[in-house]
Length: 388
Image 1: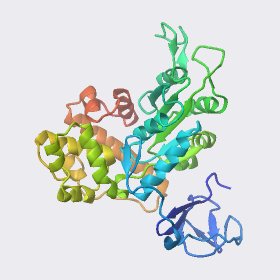
Image 2: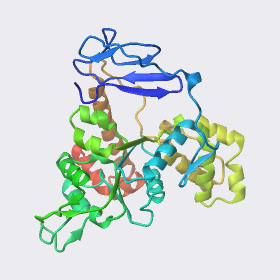
Image 3: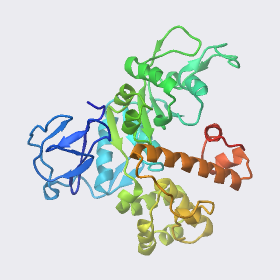
Image 4: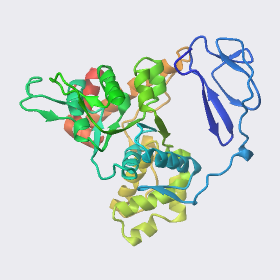
C-alpha cells in the first residue's frame, strides 16, 4: 500500500476524492482512477478487486452551517467565510492543548499570524514564542540555530550558543517553511518531537526541553513524502493537528473585514478608511486574483495610503514588468509531479534573474525588496548556477 492511498475531502458540493499517481493505484468498481466526486455507494480497494462499503457523499443540503456569529475572530485574525471559521475552530482546539500543529497554506495567507494566535490563546501565552525560518539558512547554520552548539564545536564557535529549542523552553517554537528543512536535519528534528530532548553541536549528552511545536509550509508535504524529499515519520509527527489556511480567493467575503483590520494596523485616518472601504472599491478588491494573498492585499492598501488614492488592484503581469509574456509550453507526457517540479525550477530561476537585473546584481538590495533572507537568496543562486 502507498504511503497516502486515498484522500476524501468534504466540500459544499459534496465529497471530492483523489489518489496518488502510482502503482498499483486505487480502483472504484474495477476502474483505476485519480480523482472523482462521490455521488452514491461504491467500493474501493488499492490494487485489489473493489470491496463494497456504505460510505456516501454528504449532500450539500444536508450540511449544517457552522454555529457562531456571522463575524468570527481568533486573535487578530478575522473572518466570516465558512472555510476560515472552520480553521478558527481547529485553531481554538489546538490552543487548548500542547499537541504539535502543522499549518498548511499558500504563501501570504497568514500562517505566522495563525501560529501567534494559537500560542497566545493557550496556556503558554506568557512563555517565549520563537520563530525559525527553515528555508533561510543553510543546513550547518540551521542546526546550530535550532539546537545550539558548544564552544569549539566548529570553526568560529568561540563560545557556547543556546539554540531556539532550548531558548523556547516552556513556550512555543514556530518552524516556518518546514518543507525546506534539509534531509540531514529531518531525523534530528524527529528525535526532538518524539523524545522532547535536544543535543547541542559538539556535545555528547541530551537535555530535555518542554516546548510546543507549530510548523508551517506552503508545500504539499504529502506529495513531498511521496517523492522521497520529506520523511513520512516526520510528517506524521508534525501533522498531529493539521490546519489548512484558505487562500484569499477562496474567501473573498472576508476581504472587507481584513481590509478594515489592515487599515487600522497601518494607522489610517478615518477619512482614509472611509475612502478605502467604499462598496465599489471593496468589490474591485474582491474581484482581484491576489496570488500573494493577504500579504499582497496589505501591500496594495499601503500603496493606496502612500498615494492617497483608491488604486485599482494590479495584475501580476502589470506588477512585474520583467515577467515573461506568452504561455509556457507543457509536456503532457510527463507526470504531474515532474511537470510541477520543472515549472517551479523555471520560475525560481526566472524570478531570481529578473530580481537581480532589477537591482543591478546587488544581492542585499534584491533580498530586501523580495522580503527574502539574503542567505536563502544565495542558496537559490547556487542552486541555479547564477552569479550576482
